[in-house]
Length: 387
Ligand SMILES: *Cc1c(COP(=O)(O)O)cnc(C)c1O
Image 1 (cartoon, rainbow, N blue to C red):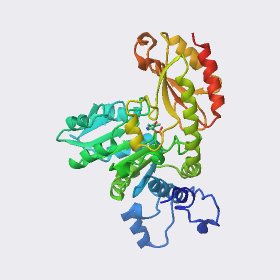
Image 2 (cartoon, helix red, strand yellow):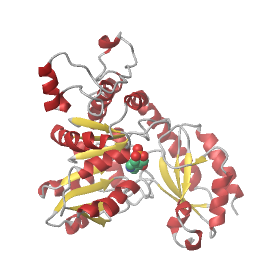
Image 3 (cartoon, rainbow, N blue to C red):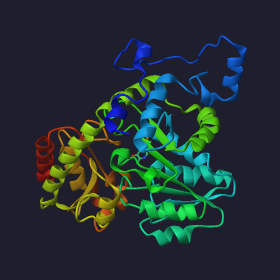
Image 4 (cartoon, rainbow, N blue to C red):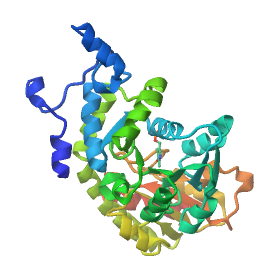
């Protein structure tokens, strides 16, 4: 399906709402019935029609259709956050006694689920450096039911060979789940590579303006129905109509924003790489990246989020750099209009800061929609203030 069609037309039945260009926000909790028989049918299968907005809602449905098509998936469920989508997707696929193999250091709240919540239900997780296919094989047990991928990882950008991991999982009847937030389906298409379920936080690139949270889960219809009938309805973490409307709005400009951010990222990285106070950059599309070949093979784009390593022996100079930035803000998240940094040392007890550990000198940056020269000038003056 053509991406322009998906973003501008798919799912939008304008003749049903006065030919308005923008879809209505159907801000209702419930839907009325004229016939008892129709009500009975709705009770039998809540995924077949509108009954109550904890289940289906027409505004949310427009978004579901677009996100499923973008992913090349049969169906999509949209949640109130990416974390909620991860929770439902995993929880629906495990039972007591099961085992999960996950990449090292997955997104914080996926890891908390594996480490804190699932062990209460006797579901265990083995973490591996997912870069080598043989490690997936080695970590697999007779009770392994799920492989959890995040490629690229949003902190160290490590990739997994998605096709090979999916093929291995298929040969063992193991379900695969990938966090595809970094690439979005515009730059990486895991379903086509054999992955069963993809998740992306819509809070980042889809929303695009740092004003809404959401999360998408895509897969085949049977899987989405299974999740809808249990976790989606039971937890009640579906997205609200107004937030779905904001995400539809964000989708209109997604390709233009990613394109702009890709160009800016290239310029900012070029500047950082030649700077004497920068030891290096970690970015999948930079030639110095250890998995550059794989990145080029399975991703059609990379942008926005990267890490650079400051050359310094002191935590104070990293602090000085970050606090000297005048336009680039210090905040979590990414994917919005605004550029951001987050230094690794903000998560480290200052007593434990070790300059010999490269990771402690990481600064993760997200390049937003500002002019590249504006960002470079800001970085330059802040680097100059480091001592
Ligand atoms: C932000 C993020 C999430 C979680 O999304 P929320 O919408 O914040 O819940 C999941 N994975 C990655 C890689 C993220 O960056």
